[in-house]
Image 1 (tube, rainbow, N blue to C red):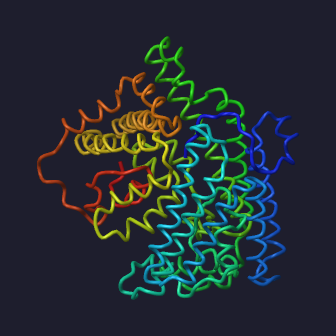
Image 2: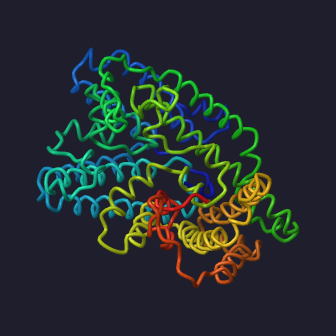
Image 3: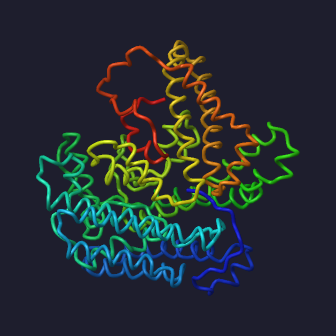
Length: 508
């Protein structure tokens, strides 16, 4: 999620593109990453057109997808890719050798334990100055896939149908995957570098040519429409891919022209902090955070386009009868930029990680679900102190936002003008609060975080706590309706934790 402070770093990956890196002035690890993603995009089109299920067997598709993915890892990370391969192999041994009643527990412990060990080592190796694209990113994605598969395998082979939710029934796995299926799912070239994590059954449907027909069947069944989904031609992803590539081009242009001129670390520059006024510091913090987002938009949107180009990611037909290819999309840019509450922002950011947390933790914990989900989210992100400052800061801010909403929002619903004014005010407050909350996530270190908070006079912490205390309601809360749930009154956790139970809260 965040950009660490940069230090000179010699990549452990391939140096074939070093002349390109020197010519463009970009770090070699970034050039290697972009080259692999562009090659993946081209390969995805070929995969859909020439290695379609109509032309080759699923075994060939699995083999090609896994082989290319492993090649990308070696090209980008050199011997560091062995960490990713090792944890995948270890988990496969668990799948085929361990008691299925405990396979999900073993997988979670091994995957998260190995990830955490690597995250701790990274702090000491790079001393807060890690390369912009190091091996921990793919390792985090693989951890999501490994644990998702293990839990869904346990659902399908150890639990009774009545013990599962409707979603768990759909995704339950009833047979152990073969080695090539396992490698293909976890290491396929479509998502090995930047994700997103998807469900095993959906991926297998894609490889075996049932992905689109299955989604259409589910959509027609839920809407009680006439059958006929199996008589229509599979929709083409070309329009969706072109649209997402245009978004990527815009984000890249923004990065080259704006982002690089607004470095995050300047927020804690001693001269800037001591000489600039509070309003100037606040303005720079706001715009530097806004400018940091497009590189994430670029990476996630390009990854989505790669999957779509291969024919994966079909969601169904939208209300206008047009195909939607957002099944595994990781963000909604419009939703993020127009968010008028923390909840709305989080609902549209790193979506697949929120779904993973819900799948493996929140839906399964017998008690203390939010606390456990918070812990898992924090561990998954890493051990940098800045991450925990962000998660902890989000708690009073969200409590205050809910208190303010419940206390004053109804006064602004009487007219369209008043409602518009309320939306503008809450948009500005949300964006400034997000800026304040996310800054430690990007600065990483304790000393930088404290310098930033002091330069801001801890104003968001103070305002949030005072608002939460002053607007605390002592009367009985509203009775939940069909659109709300008692979960909404629970304390929030991290960004992804809030996404886990976001559907249970009212829209702000």
